[in-house]
Length: 193
Image (cartoon, rainbow, N blue to C red; front, side, top):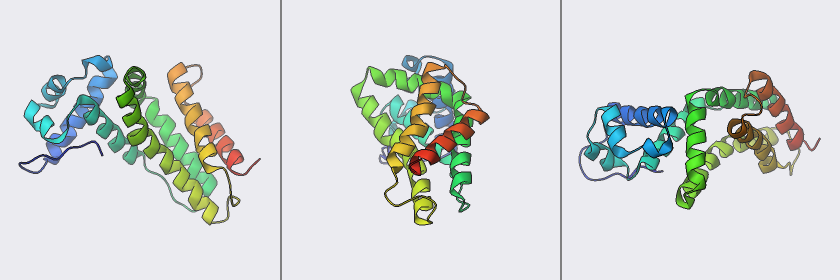
């Protein structure tokens, strides 16, 4: 987790939400370099000290905001693996079509020139999102909907590889149709088809 809990009063949920929303708004409307603690504090209507009480850097704030939004996407668990994977990918694509897509592109670009940020982004955000899909595939495997030894990590790479490639290159949309096609590809790989 990126938050650093310092001494003092407990975190105000209202201030926390304002800070995370401010970081997302700033990252989606301008270059990553404009994301500073000062800018986040001004936009959130809090003091810099309030932010520093919980986070060390603007990247810490933004990563926590992305993790929060990722958790909001949620993962269905209906017992029907095909439907659950399709819905998870549909929700992920839908989230990336808007503000979160702009934030992701900005953060990915910044991470290419900052090895520490790239590692944290991979370890804290990308790994968490991949784990959601892999966990869904494992549930399906446990229920007999996938064969033992299915390449679950490879199936997740198919989903996220296509998603990130489309997000970054912009060569094709992250549409509802694409989400269905990617879900079918993920399940085909997981089933060894």
